[in-house]
Length: 148
Image (cartoon, rainbow, N blue to C red; front, top):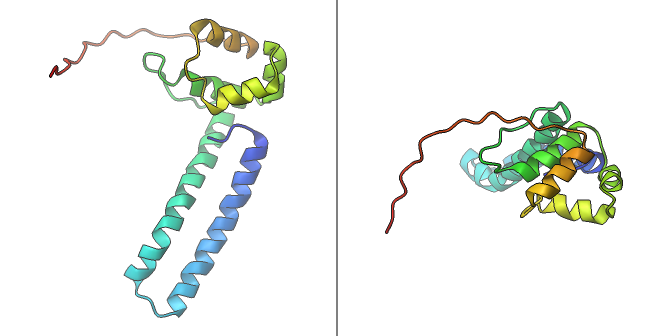
């Protein structure tokens, strides 16, 4: 996950470089006389990396536009906290200042997507982000669990 503007710029530049490298590599392979199927086998891992990087860049761009994924039973809360900070254009340094913690703590928390965060800590982060989280509760029937 891209967490800041510097990582975004680096990923965007890497994406452009990879795109060019992929095109050049494909052309060189064609010159060697390999079949389309052989070229595909060689190129597939590179294209897979390219597509993954492209998705990360596009995901960051969606976050900057304020487009968030829905939460279900608070799963993804850590990702949402990071997403809100990104959407607001706030740096990790600024969030750390507002939380009165060291920037490395925010960096570590975000790298782990706030895994194991307490509800109290999540509220502090939301307050530091000046965000009020509203939820609509929907009660769905529980799926039956298979017991062995």
